[in-house]
Length: 90
Image (cartoon, rainbow, N blue to C red):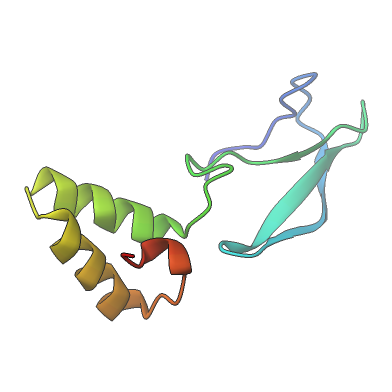
């Protein structure tokens, strides 16, 4: 596992500092630097995304596979039983 460092001061002496709860992604571990007191969340490539990483990667895979938008949408709804209104066609 990659060793955590403070993005602000590059110090390696950090501690866990609770969790950040998001509506779509759930709980995300938060850290705090013992030296500069900077609080941060490790960027996993999906920072500030509004959907679960599984949905995002599945959508990209289907897009690259030339699956139509409607089939993509239908597959995501079936797989994740997503009740989000933004996925529904009007």
